[in-house]
Amino acid sequence: MPLVGPVPQGVARERDLRFSPSPWPAPLLADVYHPRDPLRPPAPAVLLIHGGSWKADDDRWTMTPIAKALAKRGYVVVNAGYRGTPGFRYPAPIDDLREAIHWMRRNATRYGIDPTRIAVFGYSAGGHLAAQVALRDGNPEKLRAIVTASAPFDLSLFPDSEDVDAFLGAKVPDIPARVHEASPLSHVTSASPPIFIYQGTADTTVPPEHARRMQAAYRRHGFDTQVFWLEGKGHIGAFLFPGTAMDAAIAFLDQHLKQ
Picture (cartoon, rainbow, N blue to C red):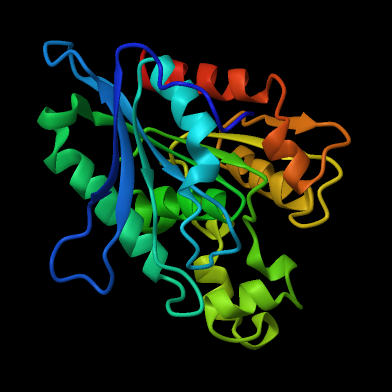
């Protein structure tokens, strides 16, 4: 997934747009990919969420190849930043990303977004945030679909992780209620939006058990959710070399946002 290469033909990219209102605890920025043709009918949109262990580093650049692939397929893409550790912890990033969705809807006419067809797509910690934004509190943003890559869904599986402890503000074994609340697995219901999960089988950072548990939770609520397994891939390998998983993820979005 090379980071170089042009923006797709017919697509405009606007960088470092502030989507957080004033006042907000910190300024939040996004890169927006949208059709150049102002007369084009409104298109479905995807909120992209980068990984990085929930830290404050602005790693939007890592999602650029995915943004370009989605924009080429006709989606409006908002590649958003969010607050992170050590300055901010859960649920600050959730609030930020929900604000990004509000901003997308407020600016739907400007960027050619169909506000009724929005999905989230995140990698690693960004996948956790994408799922949490869509699932917590019963999907108040009315998101249509979720795509995650190598995402931690059950934070109780990290009993000794400095990154998770920093994100939650205490050691995982000491805060079971907060761990439950912050785990997307806890919020799956029969009304949850459909999810596409891709995961490396050799991932030791976010073990495959996360994907298995999420798949089982969805199936308990009547969804025939499949996991796209990347055989032999680790945490970074699944992101850099997703193979046909990316095509399958975009086909999933097409199914739920275009048909």
